Image 1 (spheres, rainbow, N blue to C red):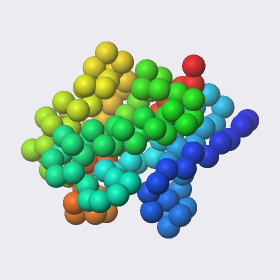
Image 2 (image 1 turned 90 degrees about the vertical axis):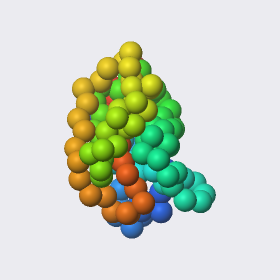
Image 3 (image 1 turned 180 degrees about the vertical axis):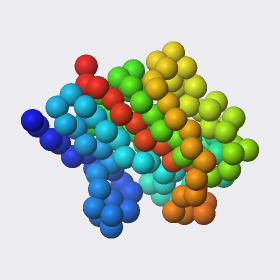
Length: 125
């Protein structure tokens, strides 16, 4: 079975030894994607952080040959349960019609500036 690694821009990829995404057969697995911009600081709001996470996941999916419409599962990791509505709104703007299986978990993340992190699994068309 073919296995292809998709790299992103996170400085944590070589430290932890992970890829932004892995394509295995028709499956695309996008790693936990934190709101790490290419330059500068993460956005302030949970909504804007989730929008950035979605953008980064979308880039990884595109490199893999997939799109949001191919996503079958997402996992959202939220630091503050009070932010769930902002995170859900951003997620719903992208996935409202696609409706993948989704999970939201309240947890801590590596960087105290991060309010949300996103994983996604897709099936290539």
